[in-house]
Length: 274
Image 1 (cartoon, rainbow, N blue to C red):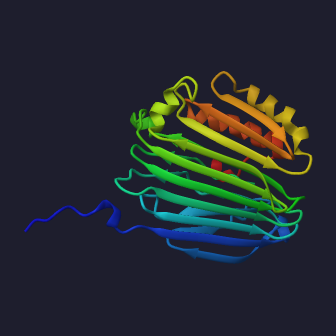
Image 2: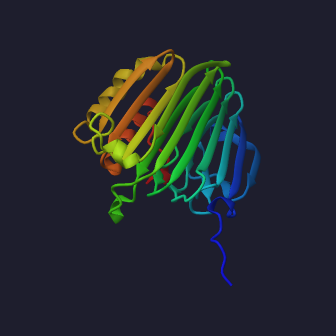
Image 3: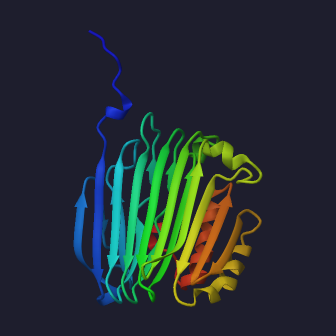
């Protein structure tokens, strides 16, 4: 007996959520409340001198129709460094997009380095991603997100994938930064000279803190050391620094991003990046 193939949109989908609330404590902060469901888990490495939170996706990747939510809340004076155990993989979708929503909340005087490893976008993937940040006026944030299009080592250099990436940052309740990135047929778009000129990796760096504009020359100097293989630009305004990086080489882009991270924060990325 035969029948019609199953509707791709009706297949079982993964729904996962991970939330963590931190208070000021030893090594800068301590987790006070945790919530984990689906395939997302928090881990807290102890071999560093800072409070480090590492997110694990036990499912190994995100498929079309999956929905993932991540939330971090830092109380007054808490200092946290957050990352992921591995690069996130976005698989091909024959139906709805994968959705990843991240919310970051920083209380008075809180400090957060949000440094997940790369997101790898496979051929045929569809991704809708959002980052919402709500921070106190005197909080300190450094956030870096990197996207790699195609499994380059496997020869997947021309990919037909789509991306919708939305960033919103509110400081003391006021919207101070909004950014929308939309790519359809990502590979073809990034091949255009005015868009990526053949780039396969892109990164956005956002720093927000009182007086952070004074660090702009340091960031630009760090990026200039990689200008032969990474196109990058940085600007500062209203207590923000925003930098964009594009490259045909994900590894070279990572090195440039690390240089900018060190220039801004004086620290290397988490050891998990190694």
